[in-house]
Amino acid sequence: MDVGRLFPPQVRVFPLPNAIHPKLYVFGATSTLRWKESALYPAFRMSARLYRFLIRAKVAAGYTSFWNNQISQWIVSEFVQDLLPNLKSCVILVGTPGPTQKLIVQLWDGKNVVGYLKYAEKPAARVRLKNEYQVLLDLPKGLAPIPLKYGAMGDGEALLSTPVFGRAFSPTPYPVKRIVEYFNGLKISGPLILNDHPWIRMYAERNENIVQPWLDVLSRRKWSIVFSHGDSAPWNIFNLANGNVQAIDWEYGTCQGFPQIDIVQYILQVAALIYRWSPQQARNYAVNFLCRSNSPLRRVEAQSVVCFAAYHGYMQALEDGQSPDASLQIWRRAVWEGSM
Image 1 (tube, rainbow, N blue to C red):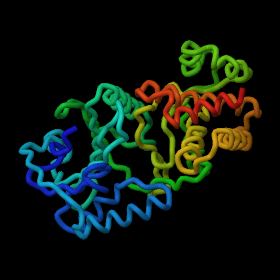
Image 2: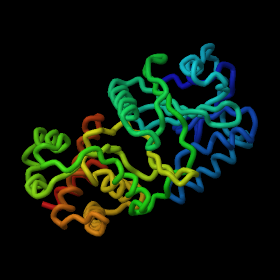
Image 3: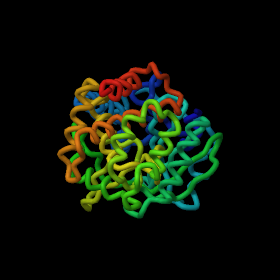
């Protein structure tokens, strides 16, 4: 991806932490602006937060490398000008490398963030981005950013949405009460018998041998259809100033989801990526959490839901082109294989 095309012409662009492995690009003309812009640099573990502070201080002081942008056309401004005519600058966050890699562009009017734009060029990334646009259109107002525009931009496709003003939740091993209430409030339908649930039918048709034991257990009660985020984690869930909760990054979302999957995915992702728990420890923790929830499941039901959540994450990663031998994929498999 040619990042220069996403910045205005003739500006100094600062890659963070460096030009070899950039995660964030800023171009603020003053130290104050560069400090504010660099707040988008991702960090969740304590050591990463300390590293981020040092990087932000260096770029604010101008002690990092930069390059002069020689591009003559600012395609971002052209894409958003009918909706954000006062756009002055932007910050670019580089997504995880791979088939679904995207760039996230934070849009500024000079003083404040006025929107976010996601940009995708690779085919798999475009599929995910288009899905996010559709899910955002379907979600009730107030639960997620509002999609403002979707269409072609440069050599790819872009999604423009409203900003979310708040802070991401801290990565605790368990989702706090407000997050649980948020996901429990995404119900679409009343209870259905298992064979009529669209999410279950999808997986039953894909790989009956793996999921059949879980289906046998879950068929003993009825389950609602819910909006499902598909990639729930504390960095995708924001605590707003007005006390509400909103989730961002709905590219794996669906309006045919299964209850409790997002809550389990939250626990599994934090366990694997932040706390480095073993698959067995994470599985047991998630099962115990579901059994103690306001709508408690029987332990065997909770185990089946946790296995389904791990399997769901595994299958999504395969669709994205990740190898089954990737470390996180091996970890996910161990979650459900260890329960058999």
